Length: 81
Image (cartoon, rainbow, N blue to C red; front, side, top):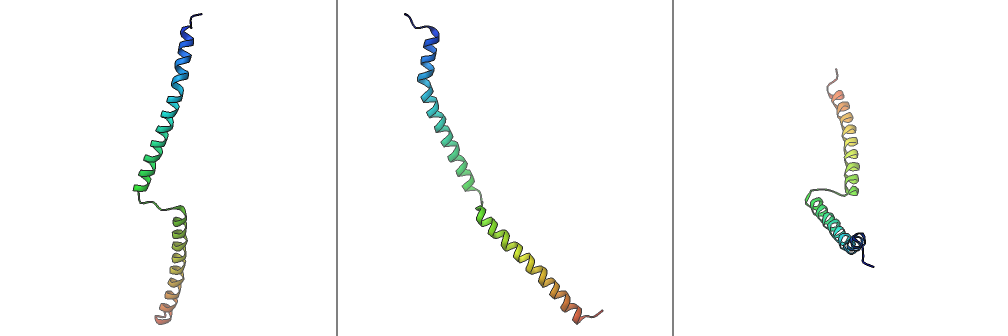
């Protein structure tokens, strides 16, 4: 029995599928590497470093607020109204 056009087409697809999947994986890996390179070229920090800096900033802001209160009290003592 002679293979039909449909059988030929199915066979060609079956032969090409592994190559297409391999190319897809290669493209995915290339895109991932490109994204990693782009992110590395940016001046980004890790989440842990960001959180640590955020805590330090909050602590500094709190200390500034405390010192402003002390300064105001000292000013009031020196310059009574």
